[in-house]
Image (cartoon, rainbow, N blue to C red; front, side, top):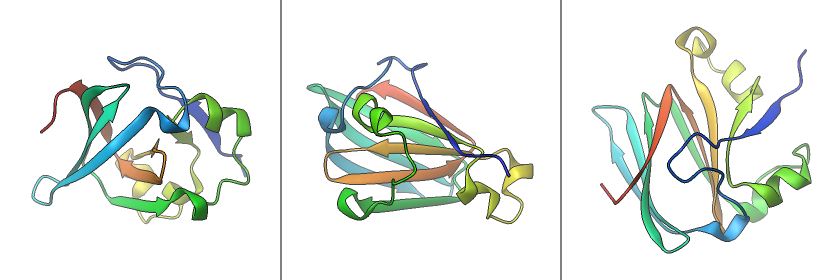
Length: 127
């Protein structure tokens, strides 16, 4: 079995988002018809929207309870937006591999949001 890998996402308008407390003031917007989740957030004093398309699942957990024992501690300090490659969570979902889902994680100061989705977009402003 392959190990999960944690890759910082840097291909956004913001580049690499550094540090646990870089993302604040989260408002969640759900569009059930389009299977879309959006996080309206404040990143370094800028209004930003993280949008996740074709979501099969979403998890939200207080950071204190989030199980990250196997994560590289340097990753958690160096980024708060990353993809879990070879995700056990995705592999455990029926049909998820065939659907081309990605496991994307957004870590804020208080919460961790995880998405099983086909894609994401990050843009200035709120939805």
